[in-house]
Image (cartoon, rainbow, N blue to C red):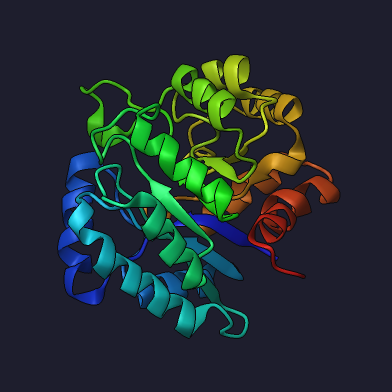
Length: 272
């Protein structure tokens, strides 16, 4: 079984323009057209069984429309045979009534939220992010954050570096906190030193094609296999290619199974 814990889709009417803009900004070539059908087709060709889709709010006013889109995906695809999608919602640090919005998402069956400090122009230790993560802990929801360097913001301060994340972990202590990009994108030495071994999850989104295998394995060994989630950041990485890279490491089947799907099932509260 393959679960990709970090993918992105957009409503059909904005998918093309959004993907083109993001591709230009990040200088990355997408593997899908950014639509739900595009991801489902990619899953079919890659052998993926379930994908978690992670919307990002770039403005607080997007909360309602993005939440509706997430709910519609879950209603249609969360139990759709062999090819399934589970959509999280997005939260923005400038949203009003964060607690109320998180409670609403919980009532709609949303399992988690995505935040992105760079896109939202806010450092991870900001009081609003602390409230979002604290509310997620209160309502037993997952928080996934972009962490480390974003290719589209290379000339900007890194708003979610390991040293800031460590302070948030110490302050909130939420066990369902996921750091995308294997702790911190392109800051993996700092991840090994500062974050590996803390009680959070790392996903492998946009990592396996860049990180050197010895460093990947050092982080894996120090952090623990039970806290690693296979992920690609599709459409910005190809699922099949990332599966092949991880399999090439020659990890034993028990470790592979935990990374590819067992840890994700446990975190999502889904039985095999």
